[in-house]
Image (tube, rainbow, N blue to C red):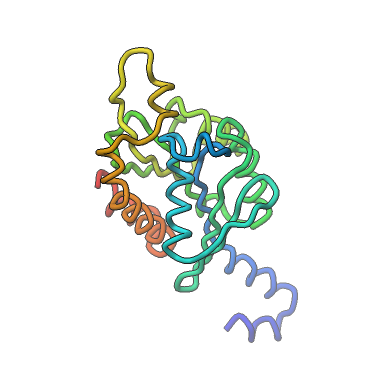
Length: 210
């Protein structure tokens, strides 16, 4: 249909085609810190989820400006997977750059972050809200100048002693968590696909608290 309109209406139709195509593009951002010393830590679960996604779907990341990027296509949707290379506290710079470059509407963005206020592996999806003390989310909100963006919080639990929060967040998964991690990562991949195919509200209804 759009090809026929392009032949009849030219530039006007081309603009509508671009808008239509962009509505089918989704920016999936996993937050984390670059460097081998951070790769297996709880704070890097956003990176872990996207790395797992890439391995399961046999796609590869390419190192580009402000991040590593991979593209996955499913049922007419394009998922742009992004791991910012700006370090956690400056994540917003990368998100803003790729949001603009890919011309993806804000409602089609999903930010994946760790959350120590949730039990291990639990899922909480929200359309808007505060940064919850997460520096990566804080910077994204500042760079986008809004708190109205989709976020997927992955629980890393608060099972640490007084004064040991940083040690817990930047520590590696314990043996029990590591055994349960594959099932939680599979659930996360299903969630991301649902976000693109079924929309945020339906995905929230299906996955929140699961």
